[in-house]
Image (cartoon, rainbow over all chains, first blue to last red; front, side, top):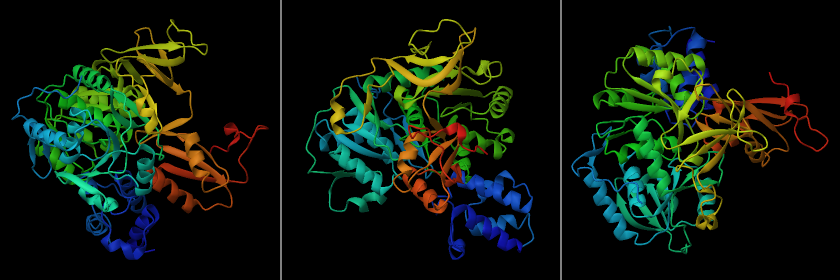
Length: 77
Length: 467
């Protein structure tokens, strides 16, 4: 799996969304992505890519696309 | 006796929101007069709560005008809300404008602060006990129609006691982190309104940058959290943040693990902040005890001492008081914040005070030689998920609407659900999430050939494969 596929898969698995919905997915856009879901997302990404995400990035990560931009600092897409 | 008969300066700021709106105590008082003109008699109103001016002004006005609000979260599922409306037959509902679509055929009689008051002309009046001030949900979840009946005296006494041990005065600026319809969240609002403090209202959560910007620019002086809040703070490296205005942190809604509580305590002692671990139940309006910050490191895991005006005791299985220390018994609380009892339908709202100031908490506890209390277990089968009390037996009954059999166990913030092998996990997970409003991450599923039963047909939990 490529890194972008892995990135997508974390959202799909955790939030039960479809791949075509990802581009427009925002924090609180689905019920599962609340603050609890957010912590699960961060933990899932840290585990998948074996990284530690910094505080400013955790609280700045408010959409699928923004997250992609943020993760580009840690992961080569 | 009305709790918010406040004599604060009318020009004092009561509310600041993240979009820069300022409301004074005078503004809230003016709104309360408008409400009085529209609702001219004592009746029941559903109040759909969020941490916004409309919600707080509505609530304040209802209490001040002796109109009885049923406190519900504004995100309540439409189907659950419809069920509660049928059961409790309120005369009005106060709701954010974006939820008006659910009530398009009914009459809007008042609007303000992006909220509307909708009247149900068809619902007749019914008797409400003269002391009844409001109704709070027992769990905020599981779709339960059971509410706690809170009196005017309960609100005032508990808010005053909390304000005393937390030293709340008019200079305090708490930032909202908990739902307003949740007893702990409401207690923060009550205790600060009582003292003429300034509420920093935000719908943003701790994992959003805007929340932290708001907290810093508005110089929030305190925040409140359930154990999960502190797990988030820990992950956000809260211990490295420099937030000089933030002086008080409170924690309730379940037990914080020892590691995190001692880390929080040391951090706060080091940085000149105060960390209060507290214990309460909605049945006691909100708060029953607190651990004074100076004891937080020497009494780890303790729920502390009873709040001012309250007292604890322990009883054995025969109801006899336990005088010795370090003996486990059921924790009993006495105080004027003990609620009047429960309601399960509109008919119950005329009932007298059934508790008479004494609450059997259902929690098992012991007391040490310094008279500090420690929780050691629970009499009934429930767990706390993200601060909400969830009854495991009720959850089983809820699930039996869609599957033939199941068994629920688990620990705080994590429920384990045993289901028959041929059932769909996705379907059950979805159903639970919709019905309870709890994030699916809190539920784990185990499929098993059959749920172990005794000869009477009762589940034998000890024989479930706990792994």
